[in-house]
Length: 180
Image (cartoon, rainbow, N blue to C red; front, side, top):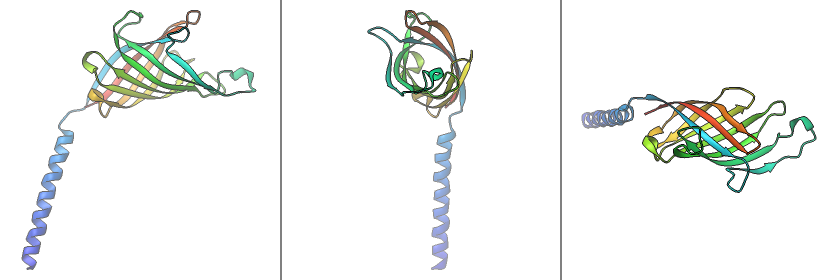
């Protein structure tokens, strides 16, 4: 009886080891790769087709921090080039809040949703602090879907064009994405 129980336990251990090794091999069968690409975000702040909407604004007694407490949501065009007529490859959707009393800095989360090209059906999520006074800002990529499943990395952004008179803003993004 003891010999049969020992054989059963050894057999169970052997089967469990094979199953775990197979599952582990499936998870690691793809190699992690680095993908780098460059895109533009087209922002329209005014007019009937504005892509940014203010949803909240806190009252403040500090006159030097007039934007502190401002929260907006956005759904901006993601394009291959800096011109508004450039090929549209997706949308950038998310929310941002001015979150500093001492500088113009945003706390932001953005979903880059791809609708064209080789990344069609995929998305990347960028969350972080965006200090607008810096020429180049860097924010972490915290995840993704589709081609970018299990993504990590960073995005560098800078302002390409700021036309306050016409309510236009073009922001360039350089992505450095590790994914499987």
